[in-house]
Picture 1 (spheres, rainbow, N blue to C red):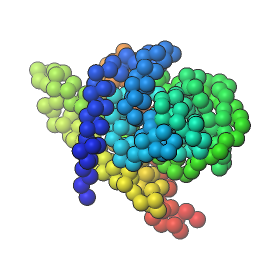
Picture 2: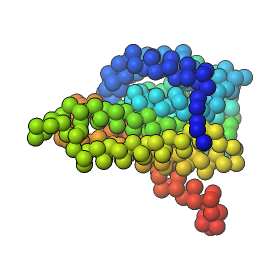
Picture 3: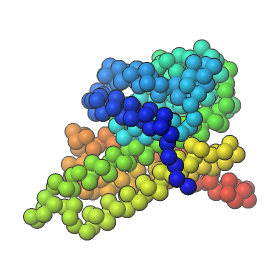
Length: 318
């Protein structure tokens, strides 16, 4: 099956790409990592004006009521540009919240986050968020930040939370799958960026009198990354179009494949760049650490493979 976005979807992606390309997302990421949320918050509001926060919020609650396809297209770009902020968490809350006023605030660009144990036990950017939530069992609660935890990705500032009052709750299963799908798309975009930057680098870096990209060993590794990303992409897009009965299975398959592909891209990218790839000063590190953090966010690859196995072979889950 071939997935082709509509003309409206292509226009949306082009508009979003122009906005992000014209913004210094690297500087915003670095400032966010250092605790200065000003540039990132400004970018967050600009993206909210483009409708990114409102994508899957229902129209009657002030959102766009868009499909998961638009969500995937947007989050792939967020990953490609390493945009800071709790984006998957907003996608989760778009379905988890049932209060129209809270959903309207979310759609308008309120910085909100959520902790969902056991897969996401900390609230990403909880200290910077105007609204913090926690999901426990089948209920959503307000939450208060009680501490901080260091992440491998410095732009993901994790917070421990204390449970507060229970709220009217939406569809938490759909909310979880939406956040997983958003994370898969984010990983796909980050993997594509690492591959593109690595290809550019190996065309310029010379050793033993020739560009290192001319060596077969380098070509083969980069080809493996290209294949992995190309195999993950239809799974991510297919999950965005999945029927309700197949959604959990397809979303988990997409997350596992995207995580594997992006992680391979990060390993090959680091190896091709050599020691410079380890340094925080080099921009590649922003994508390497983002990928490393998102591989296990919203469910580890092992969890999602078990989920796929249980859906394909129900007896295997017993």
